[in-house]
Image (cartoon, rainbow, N blue to C red):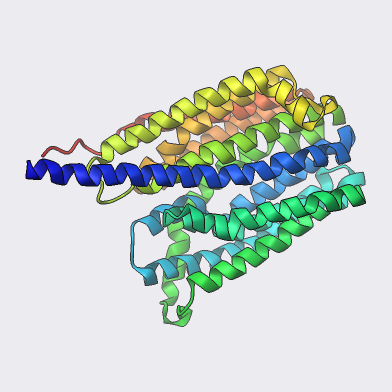
Length: 421
């Protein structure tokens, strides 16, 4: 009886901890999702059918830039932080990430701005450049670290809530000026302020000079595979809209932009939040049932992916018409392909984040991601040559399907063994 009681207590505590973490990591991103849903209708109506696709493409370019500048810390960082409770080691991890990300951003930012300059409509160039630069700068935010330490409220305080307030503040300025620039301008200032304040908090008392010089280089090598996989995965995830903007009519690009926005809100808020909530729980070194936790995470992501597929395929055109305006409502068939992509990106998340990357198989993930990227980008290129947004959307779906097909078996082979008493 005593042994049984001792086993029950941590299980109950674990479930309560997971429930709290799920609530926090789902609730906090839900708040971040409300902000875009509030401001996007203003953006779409100010930009109109001619500019909506252009502005969306600039945001996508900046988002890809932020992934490149993040240099794998979104994948490599949370497990590394979660596996240590030593404050000095966590400080060293965060300091290393700041140095690496700032160096990467110094290279990536000019490239993002140059690509944006050539891709977007000249009439919207200045707004687009500011949008691309602002979203590239989000690479320096501390969200990945908050995920690693399992503290959603820390993410709320130094990331989500300040940017939510900045978004709300931008709406009346946009209405008064009938311009888009107040939104990215306020977001940029907020991003830089949040990062500075968090760095002061987390690195208080830390002496970087006491760190061996070779440790930073070692950290770069450790995160390089994750950086490559993250970059490749997000290349085919963010390039469909810039490709469509550069190859189809403004009307078709705007309709494509609408379903792309709907898809990304779901991926960021639901898939991303679910992955963040489960990661620290699944990778807990003291977990009595690690295999069961992995299976629960995979099952939850499968269900969420199926629901997202149905919502995008069935409700995509209607929802985007209501939110963004009837003149830029999504088309049916591209919405179906975005739904397929949503299902498979949700399924791949626990395979990569909880099984392959933490067990040191970053190169496997990188190789599979590169193969799936080539498949997706070639399909998108065909769609661009045909000026067909359906084929471009199919390229996004094809890349996600291929990634799961390549990773599912090796990931499941690395499920922890069942522990026996």
